[in-house]
Image 1 (cartoon, rainbow, N blue to C red):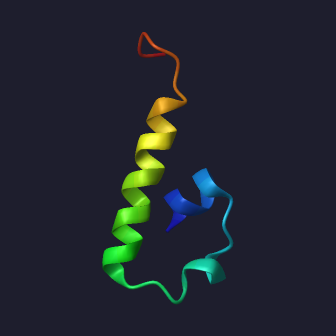
Image 2: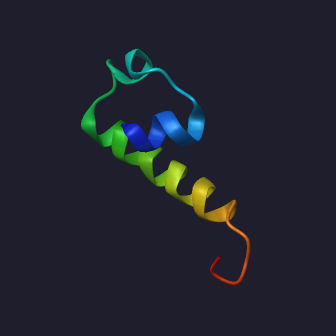
Length: 43
């Protein structure tokens, strides 16, 4: 849930009603978005 809050700027209450499967789908989207924001070259 911390990943979602950091990437999407969501309050924890925004995720309270989500099922685990939905949270995992959003977490994957957050991971892709976060990795896409890193500069190329590994730094």
